[in-house]
Image 1 (cartoon, rainbow, N blue to C red):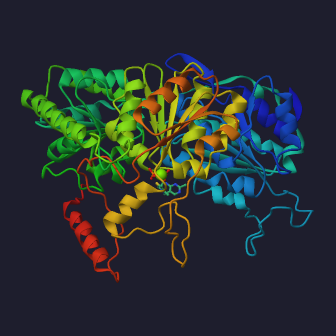
Image 2 (image 1 turned 180 degrees about the vertical axis):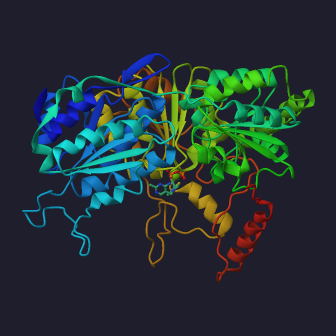
Image 3 (image 1 turned 180 degrees about the horizontal axis):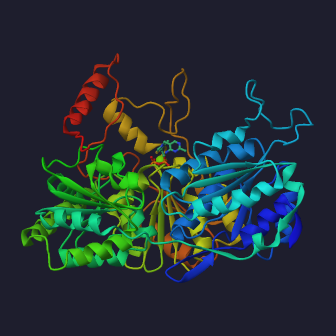
Length: 619
Ligand SMILES: Cc1ncc(C[n+]2csc(CCOP(=O)(O)OP(=O)(O)O)c2C)c(N)n1
Ligand SMILES: [Mg+2]
């Protein structure tokens, strides 16, 4: 039996029939399509989507990059068991997907990208929005998506879908391989009809398996851990994706293992021995334990420089690592004993293999002591200072106190992700999404919308961004209004890119081009008075409720009112511009200037470079 359909119809019907299943629970794998139409996708594809409107929701974002971020927020909330498709037109619509795709693949979050493409027939000559590569006629701008995609295909004949789409689904739902999946669609081919086999459109359930660890790997890891005097667990995003939080809390409790978290793993640590974020944005407590650890159990983490202090954090000469990861490459990082497995399956097996063993009692005392000293230092650091307005750290702590069961907190770039990793103590039942793999300004708001689409019953979704990030892309507020997606955006106004400014002052010793200032004569960077922007007014103009808060009391009142508001809300929150939060003591490698006219720059560069002495190679 066959059914005559266009390529676009077949694509849409196929997507509507895909399901994923893990632990006996089934859900639609791609329940909605986000899209901005142009001539490269409006003809056959919009017609097919309109026909299937009862089965696939259509979300209308305002920027192609943003729709990818929405899909990633959705995928994070769904623990990678479902995502959204994103369709863009040919040319600029398609290239606008690239940054989103890179965010997806870096963070190992699935998204299906469907950019329009040139004509397969080429009868038309150069078409609108085609970049003609002089030496390679089969290249189009969509080839920019290849290096940022885990799977890429270009559909030049309708029947190619029969192979391309199942492989696209396999990769999207593979814990090990997932990332951006791109299926580029020649614009003429989208409308071409073909007799597709009927069973291609039958409901298909993809089993997302929990890869079990090998008995040998578990035995090797357990042997190493049993010999540990000062162990530490690092919990990454893999713990969330695997839904392994309870298993981690159980093993941590039974074996007295302290747990530190990466940005992607924020909120995944359970039990009484959680020591907060680790690394460059981490807590002093976690970093101190890392410095002295003899066995580090890395779980679902890519171990980026922010986690390892550019490989300077682990100072014990004999430190050894266990790597639990679905990706074999990640599992063996830092010369670890690799356990290539789903985090929950590995934790359950390790729990059995470690039965009866506990880390030495003095280690728990060390953990408590490190945490108490860090807490005291942070409390002192966060105290109000004479002549200063509310600090961002104080505001984050206030929000933290107001957050409760079902709430989410979202951040990606600027100082918010670091402040959250360090200061946010997730109240029970809350979730965090800190995208710090690509740390993409502009991820936050659309990701918050994606989380709301995935979890309509979630409590408040607090999207924490800086003023620079708000200015980069505030327009998804309109999409949030359209979808009645309740998110509360907190915009920290500090007049510029202050996280980068702080970095600049610390490594270069000069202030250049990072604050929002008016030009006051001369060339170089604008260095006159700070420019004032009405962020709350912008938000109101885009259809949101909005407040301006300059004090803790005003912020508290605004958050309470935002909670009871029906649609999206924005709080413009003014904070002390150049005041950061106490550092956790980790070093971060940077490409500092080896030569400069200014002696301060050279001095700072030398000082910074001295930290490299602590960098180690672990194999
Ligand atoms: C798309 C993108 N461009 C540039 C950067 C580099 N960058 C990281 S933080 C930052 C400044 C962000 O400013 P703001 O949102 O105001 O936060 P703040 O640093 O003031 O806390 C920049 C430009 C980035 N991460 N993403
Ligand atoms: Mg700022």
